[in-house]
Image 1 (spheres, one colour):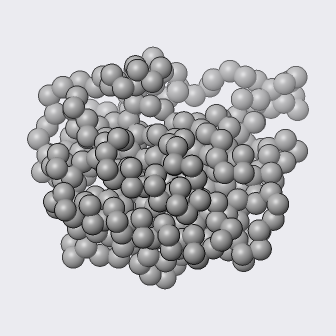
Image 2: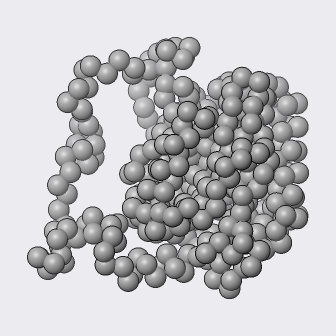
Image 3: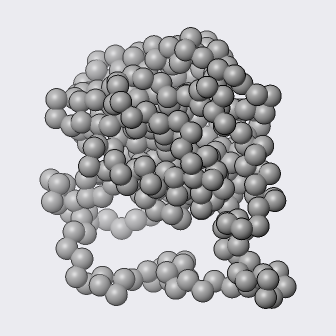
Amino acid sequence: MNGLGGLNKSPNGVVIGLVQLKLPDVKTKADLTAQTARVVELLGKARRNNAGMDLVVFPEYMLHGLSMDTNPEIMCDLDGPEVAALKAACIEHDIWGCFSIMEANPGGNPFNSGIIIDNTGEMQLYYRKLHPWVPVEPWEPGDLGIPVIDGPKGCKLSLIICHDGMFPEMSREAAYKGAEIMLRTAGYTAPIRESWRFTNQSNAFCNLMVTANVCMCGSDGTFDSMGEGMICNFDGSTIAHGTTGRVDEIITAEVRPDLVREARVHWGVENNIYQLGHRGYVAVQGGAGDCPYTYMTDLAAGQYRLPWEDEVKVTDGTSCGFEAPTRSYAPSARKEAAE
């Protein structure tokens, strides 16, 4: 299926490159500028590496590293110089790119944001991480939902970030909105390796969707990220996997959105995303379309509560050195403007 990493590209294929970017140590504005230049350099490497590549994907924390530092000096803006450099690189190398920024937020903690820029330098997707990796990460919870766009070659493309992928609802939402390829960028370290692998596969299989996933790689002297660039086909099988942990290696594969569409229409057995809303259609016409899941109705009603809720010990970031928050969640003004 992967056409020798995309070297033998089919007319309907989309070639994806996953950059196992070396984990940086960024403390100052000068460090941020230098790391942006490094990402731009590797985008050029990706294009030279494979002339048929349609989309190059960089991991979460590509500019920031894993320090969890919220210093305003190293935060980014959508109209800032870092994003401008990324747009220029996509134009220069005629390629789509997926990137990560820690985004300044005047109304609270910074957002952990992901963007996809097309080969003309236009930002086509803008996403804020819905599920920061608590209690470790200080980022504001995302408020823009899960966007799905028309990506390269007309594929339906979405993006989630790292810990998002541990919630099956995230991939299901992306697929429900039409995504045929879901990207997952991450900064995960080695203890998460097995969970990373099987969730990437299950997210693909449960939704008849390609998943393309990549982490930071190597060490910054404190943390060790694992690389693990991984592309999973819609049947859950792995078609490309970076297992060596080699920094700056680009894992590539061709994927076929047209076969995703075919499976979603023609599969009977294990067409799970359809069957979720059409339970038991052999017995009753069209299947049952109710919602038998208590957690869904409770969450929608703002009444989500676990049977062991009062026993949960870690409910803020104090164990990781952050002060307990005093303000309640409220969607940002930018979300309201976007609507």
